[in-house]
Image (cartoon, rainbow, N blue to C red; front, side):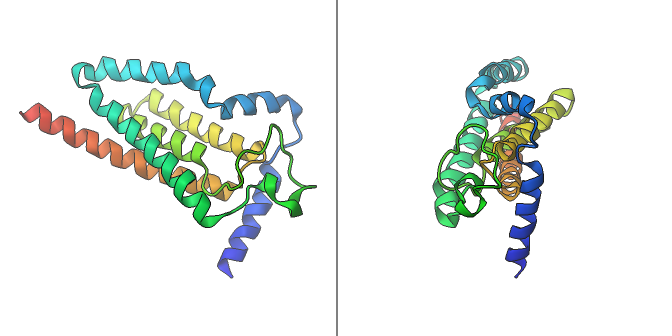
Length: 187
């Protein structure tokens, strides 16, 4: 019965966080969820990596590729089809409750790919840059993740699990990069 209680809490929290009824937030939340709007940020992060690692920039870039690939495949290709948890915007029983701001997305939502990807990147960069940049990226990942609930396409539980997966992937990738760079410096 613990699963039923978790679902009950998840729905109650979703009800509080979805939409908020502030139309002026709709456009910023749509932008936060749009992966293409962040291309300048990604280019800036690549620039920062190049500044720090120069000829060895390929090491953290491969780690980022690994984070994104694993986060996306684990959430979209493994977890969503396995758990088959409908997105809130797809639940017929919630039709009157859910505020869908801009489309619904795919059928299933557990776990959130947006949350896993952004938190994976933010965790990785916060370990490489344990300063303002790292903190700003964590805030960015939290905002992007929240936007998914606001837009009505994920439950908070989808987000939390996606973020946890992202943190694990980001930390693992950081350890791989640290190990690879320390062994190549000893050579």
